[in-house]
Image 1 (tube, one colour):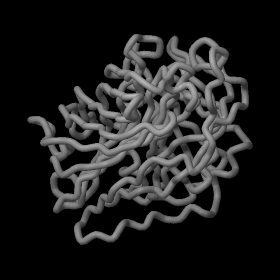
Image 2: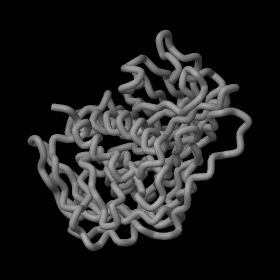
Image 3: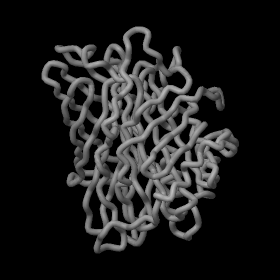
Length: 377
């Protein structure tokens, strides 16, 4: 059965292109995710369409996308580091901590997000300036034999309020005609996901981003010595010994240098944490890009180097030359970025992070934004 991480890759592959297509004709983003529905989930309906709680999504604070200043036809600039906006995370409470597999969080539990997003037009991609958001747990639904969380996603800075959103990727029509969808890749204590928002009020302004939350390890429960390895193997399902993986999206100029092209990316993660020194290191391997326009191709190995503070992790990302046959979505050794995240669970059970890469190029730049989920070995 396809895992949520692999569904997330398909969502990002579809949404990346849909976001750009919605920009190209001046048509609103409202119709675009309806096409994505056939690509991202077997369910064809969602209760969001009738919800009266989504009125905030029509906020007048949204404005038409202003492309970054560039001298090229295509302009792609660097994503900012993921942020929780100073919000206090939900911490685990020991053995009785709720989880996403056998002891669900109480209904209406509000989880602050570590979040990052990109704003897209047909010829530009830039950081969306989002620094905070929340999800409110509203229950669980089943689709195709798999359980998915139902939640309300709020991102105030872009006027997004999407109640009853399914983590299956099913597109939801909000009360103002805007649309949103998301795929949530849950482990036991950590939940990471990819989401897309197509505001009807501002055609051509579309958002695609990552979110991370869960029951973060209390600082007092982080070991003072020893080390741990966390592995997320190519989207392995919740409960598997190496549950987790990598999912996200990439944007680059098309071959002609006249417009942005994009797709989803995926792979495996291996991260080491030294509790004595606080050093964090790792790699994202077996990476691939997937695009309906460009197909599935091998992609860059990504290096992680950072530090542990309390139970939070942060650091930098880098890569070497792209593998053979990576195509125009491959990145060079000039690409660099950041990661931010945390350890989750009462026994530092899981690792989660949002990561980025950016490469300045002569034809407009390349940008990547993704999530990592990995399990203690």
